[in-house]
Image (tube, rainbow over all chains, first blue to last red; front, side, top):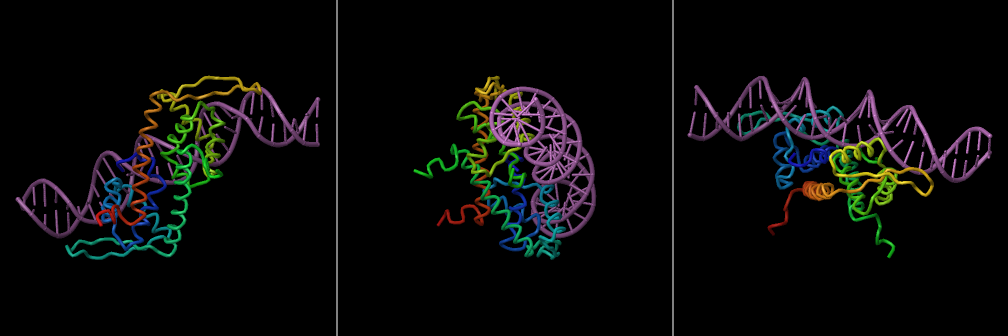
Length: 116
Length: 116
DNA sequence: CCGCATACCTTGTAGTTCTAGGTATATTAT
DNA sequence: ATAATATACCTAGAACTACAAGGTATGCGG
């Protein structure tokens, strides 16, 4: 990533699952799509992505199938399973909580004006 | 943390520096204050905080001094240095970029409606 | 034919957090 | 008095995550 890599930890899985929400994709494509959607902020490395995909597949969060590209090359597509969709829901909920927490701290304290 | 610990990676330093922006604090107090400001979302562990403080002090981002509490106990207060303020500015800027990137991906693609 | 983009993969390293301890003092409950 | 709890600091080792850097292979353009 172009950012502090620490920031990515914990959100990579959510980002990958989110991509697959809009349709099956193969690994290389996910890297490009993630870059495109984030305005080039996220440049995920292959060494980051592939292990994530393998772990998610082992855990039955994704399934995969091979398909020949128009060019003739083989591509390995990944598909969200039901379990994967559930995981994504959880991850998004955690992100919301985390995000709100950070914003609260940055703004000097939760509910600073909530009771006014 | 009560959240996926991966999510915290990379933002803990920013959160600690942010706390010190509003005044000198000692470690134990930071943990309580972080919890309070985040509505109990962030429960930083001592094993997380103290190494961060030591690393920041080694890097001259913080200075420290001891002071006796009204109770008689000694407390080690930390203070932001100029270098620390600069680091905080950087960290906040990175957080903004990261945060925007995640939201863009979650919403299905950057600038999806920007050109309409 | 050679270089580049595509497409997949793995190993080892570095960074971060947490667990699980340890030490010590002050307050509160028994 | 004494035991338990809260305060307050610290560290070593385990677990997880991302990356760097390597490898393999195919298709296309010059």
